Picture (cartoon, rainbow, N blue to C red):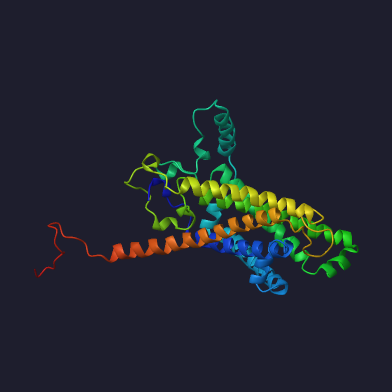
Length: 332
């Protein structure tokens, strides 16, 4: 590890991040295998068909509600939660960082503002818990998840929803709203996977998202960002994944339009998209990016387990005596 890898989050936060990622991936795989069943027929069949996938989607939805409720409770009732909530609130430095970032991009500033840096290669106190970009991601994801939960519960029973609102058109408004949010969040998650999975400094996974801060020392003696070297495979892999991410996002948006209504069908039915080979390949490229994100999440947790075992082994090793031998007892 280098000084770029200072732990930022508690064990509860990193565990919550992994569980939330798993649940969101499940919602995407089930929801979009139903919506784009022409292009993702193999995924629909793999998960047991429409009835099974619908049940799994609802189960994942309840999982999202449970995780959200747990996190809100944690933020309100614990000192660490309230402290972390204060950390992610926007400040004046965030606005200054945004302005200086624009100036930096235009060439009128020599460097980025400290509050804009994801890592600094110095003392951990110099590095904010989240940059203004990271704070924005948290608030956007939180708003999307909340609205998806509410709209998902409202369209649980489409027939009941129509009876409650009196017209089919009003009921369909919630279906369209739910689908629109899903497409927007799908694009955000794909970009999130690409940003944090293929960053040149952390490729193939960002350790601080999975390893809690109590397991990572605050200082390192092995250098800073200048001492890092790119992995040989990074250039090719990041290029391929970048292309797949753009193709996947574009294909999902186009398929949503072709499904007679953006971003879901006008009728309360699922499917009906065009059987086009290029569009099918594009949507499957997007699913591949999501699957890569799921694999990277599992790999990050595997790194955490291996790191914990390594620390335990180091603690259990006997201390070497000053003369190079084994430590003795008072009777020696």
